[in-house]
Amino acid sequence: MNEPHLLLTGPELALGMPRKEMLRTYHAWENDAGTLLGFGNQVPQSWETREAGWERQRGNMNFPQFEVVRIHDHAPIGMTTLEINRFTRSAEFVMVLAPEERGKGHAAEAARLTLNWAFHVAALRTVWLKVLAPNTAGTRAYEKAGFRHAGRLRRAGFWMGRPVDELLMDALPEDFPWPSVLTGTSSEGLQNT
Image (cartoon, rainbow, N blue to C red; front, top):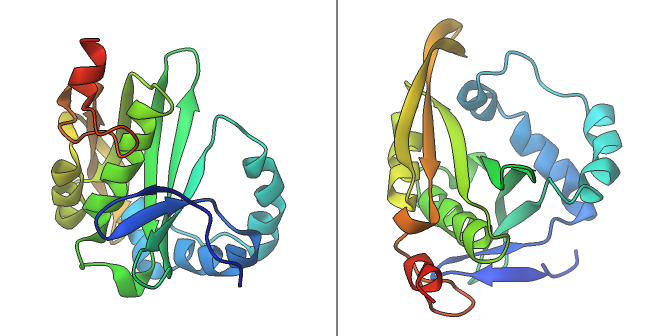
């Protein structure tokens, strides 16, 4: 396996470029029962569909994906994605962690690194996400990363086969207190220059 190409590094994790040789691992994470539950999906995605989408996604500048890598051993532990709307300079955030890496505090750092990229590199105005209301662990991790509650879509998702609310959360550069991992300057500092 090739070493990951790291883009941004945090205290314990880094964001790297996705690797084609990891596609079967990504597919396994995405189709894990816990992932499907968290996303509110009812069916897994076929390997053929995932494989066919690889090149299309890699060539789409509005769909940057990042491999989440543990720094101390360069092990891939998840993926984050920004689905960018270039007209509004906003993006939807999506994350998936390897099943064995959940509950270890990685979600907040992975989300924070992705927000750092979104605000300090991609110059986005806002990043938003949807999380199912029963997913309290996810909600707490997103709050730790800098997301705030922005609304609720009633009965818009499914959890354990039952309709549940989806919570909308968003983050703005001025709400993001962490400095750029590239320059050490906060979003607020960048806006005042």
